[in-house]
Length: 239
Image (cartoon, rainbow, N blue to C red):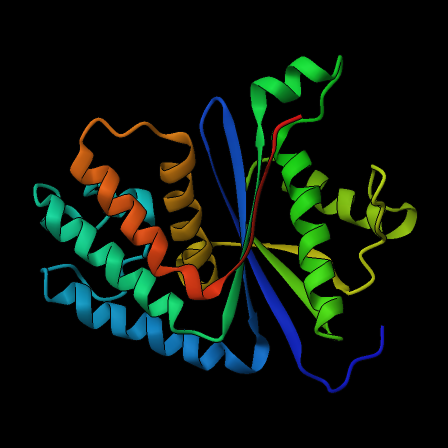
């Protein structure tokens, strides 16, 4: 695919799920703007240090919201944890980036098909199609970096097959704008993956979790609204 220039997009993928819902988020940013993402992550180091959290602690949403893996200083401070999450979402919303969220209703998937594909495979296909479509709209190409997951070799092989034979379904795509391979990396050293992780965690809380505390539910909605400037597409498939 020909591009207007040599600039390439990067799409960082991470997943979040429950027994009933499976989601993958793509955080898409121009390669030339990675410095802005790094600066935002650096500002978060300064911000969390004000709560007694070590600079360089991975911005892993589940760890933050449960007060683990470096976030122990705020383990008993719900407001502090939400404040940190709010600041992280605010930083991401201020970047020249876009977010795609795809999901699937797992019980409905299993009920519709006699031999259903695993939810991760289903949603990964859909997110690859959407990332490809966005890159084509921008008349450029995109590299995919996903968080490490079990079975990642098979997922990479799936993308190779899609680019040869097309994705399954009536909107088959050979993902022409996607530059292979599908890479898997450790999120600890990649702000883009940490961004996708936080957004995926937040959307799962919004869409798949029944909050028992109305105050927490209100906070989750407010956090999601913070991201509105960068939300490009949100769609859950209910087969």
